[in-house]
Image (cartoon, rainbow, N blue to C red; front, side):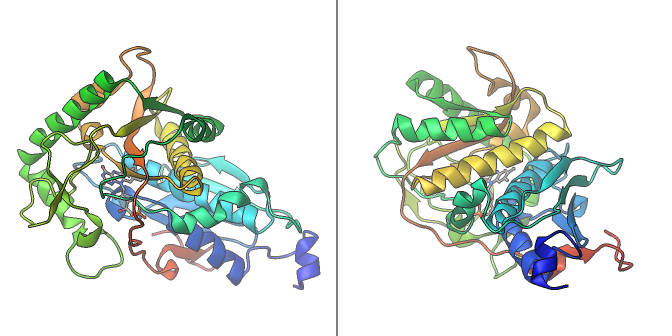
Amino acid sequence: MDAQAAMHGHGALIDEPVLRTLVEAATAAPSIYNSQPWRFLVGPRRIELYADPRRQLPIADASGRSLLISCGAALFNLRVAAAHLGFHPRVRLLPSENPTHVATVEVDHRHFRPGLLDELYPAIWARHTNRHPFWSRRPPASVLGRLVEAVACENAVVRIYDDPDEVVRIVDLLHDAEFEERNNPMGVAERTSWLAAEPSHDGVPMESLGPVPEQTRAAFRDLANGARFTRPTAAFETTPTVATLSTMHDGPVDWVRAGQALERLLLVATNQGLTASFMNQPLEQPDLRWLTRSPTTGLGYTQMLMRLGYGFPVTPTPRRPIADVIAHLGNGHAIP
Ligand SMILES: Cc1cc2nc3c(=O)[nH]c(=O)nc-3n(C[C@H](O)[C@H](O)[C@H](O)COP(=O)(O)O)c2cc1C
């Protein structure tokens, strides 16, 4: 199949270089504890994205909510990479009876110009979770407004807490959750098993954990909470910019949408020089998750809790080789 024929809609559009670009971008997405719970089944003009339930966290994520948010983030990157390559893909969410089938992305034509989402493509590689203290400079309202818009485009809502009393209320919930976490040895063991002391293709490397906050009430999540690792301490921001991402409903399709909204927010934030880390400890406990809802509107379901700010660059976390997550349709390779 020559390039001209491919441009005009005959034959395989997803050849090896295209596939590599799409899946490398998708797998650069954030995932809960860097579990990378995704797989890709590939045909000449389609990619099917599946969640990998073997990588679900049974204690922290019994419902599979974070599993599907992670896959949604990967799907958004795939859409951005498709736009980068000149595709205008058709995307269907949860398109079959199989609950692990997250999305099907179909392409039928390759344009000469990239699509609009291409402006986010470089940010896929520049985005990293930053668990270090942020600078005192606060994000201006104009930048925060762009994040609100980005999330709205993906059918979710971001709320930035500018009332200091509300920030205190959220920080209190973080610390209630940490207290509960420390008293759950099975949960500590599960989380610790995803902290990678040795070089590994998945899990969170020790150097990405960031320092332990000096203050007892910081807007932060120490992923090693309850585990016995010695780490340096540092003072975290005293007036953090805290945000929640939520959806109106709380089913699997909302989780996939939340993941796409999260990644869109993070890529727009990255293009604006902002960085983020997550504090989902109250969301992993049903009673506390409920309390993270906005006390003023009372609407929606919180899907992610984060802090935003400016900071020094951090090193990327590893990813599994793309060959480990790709299977080809019609080659006798089924999704295991
Ligand atoms: C659904 C979800 C939940 C997450 N929860 C937390 C969290 O509570 N605390 C945290 O520090 N990081 C959290 N993360 C960030 C992941 O640990 C991070 O994305 C992963 O280690 C890969 O690193 P990277 O984001 O730098 O590429 C979460 C990510 C996702 C997608």
